[in-house]
Amino acid sequence: MPKRRVLVLCYFFPPLAGGGVHRVLSFVRHLPENGWDCTVVCAGEGDYWVVDESLAARIPRETEVIRVAGGSALSALLRVTRAAPGRRSGRGFGPLRRLSDWWLLPDSYIGWAKRAAAAAGRRIARGGIDVVLSSSPPDSVHVAARAIQRRHALPWVADFRDPWIGLTFRSPPSAWHRARQEALERDVLEHADRVIVASRAHERALREGTRVRIEAARIEHLPNGFEAGPAAGPTHSRAPESAPAVPSEAAPRFLIAYTGTMSQMPDTDVFLEALHEVLKRQPAARRSLRARLAGPYESWYADRAVALGLTPGIVEFPGPLSHGESRALQRAADLLVLWKPRGIPTMVPGKLYEYLDSGRPILAVLEAEEEAAALAGRGGAVITPPGNREALSAEIERRWRAWQSGGREADTRRDWLDEYRRDRQSARLAQALARVVEARR
Image (spheres, rainbow, N blue to C red):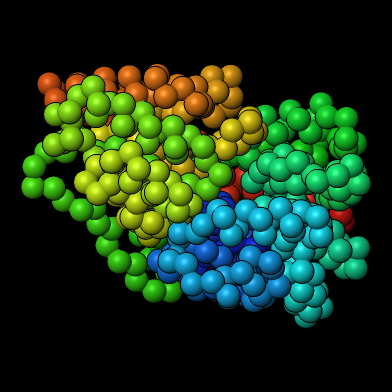
């Protein structure tokens, strides 16, 4: 049976990096083995503040990639600033984003999305595209996909890694803006042939919500997950990936690690303060306790660590690592810490699945009733509430004391985690794509 072809419309795609890249990249990697070739329409190679060249090595050679450079407010900012890769100042970025909330709807990527829709339209006109898959954030990719649907009448699947950003992560600046955001979201949800969501909480919100009329049969839960096996990627990759590396220490160290974006994350500050409290109570811990917070970050977190006397020596901000290096750091850690934006119960961070796959102990800063907390707890994580410095500090100290007396804790990985392997999730997506295509016939 000949393969079908899906046009994937997304902003974030390698060599761009960050949490939003891996879901789409895994689809592109594994859909071909499930009967689907891929054409990807995405941002330019320098249009984000985080880049991981090693991820480009995981794109299958046969994947058609159409890059649409520029066109977003963020890419314009990147061209006029000279910040170190993976580090930015909230003082500059925050005001720009708040200004864009007034003038650019649904988000600051709408200029790029219009140009991406035109590029996708030209590719569709050449033939051979069976279905469109749009993946957000940013939400403007769904607006572009809706325009493509109107013009070309192709089946369309809308994948939400997170709920509609302008109504979930940020408050619209006026009642008019809220109404406009709701109208854009409603237009997407009511017209997509299928809506895919990454969390059960988001699925319930759509099924039970009042803003949108959407049949339950058109909603499908497809969780995030992790890549099984070596982090280096497939043998058919386009370029070699450098070997992962974790700095070695001459003396034994109790290593706390975090991997992921640290932007608009107040619990990063709480963690630094909790670590400071541990060292006040246990001055001897300065000789052996280390924290490595790896990933793109707002510069004020590093400034806060300096003010608390944690750097240099105790806390390190290495910035973005390659994905292979991040996975190696996870496996090397004595304790993995996790937090996420507050007040977003629908978010289950992709890195949580990688943490669980590593088998290392996890300390998760989450609301106990959230879906992410249930998953982390199922994997043996200790849960502490956001903002609770005392609870976080006490658990870090307890773990450090246990390490002192008993050494490194053994790995513990649950077998049920295999249901979240990326190849299995992509096989489910392939079936969903086939269903919407067949339904149109």
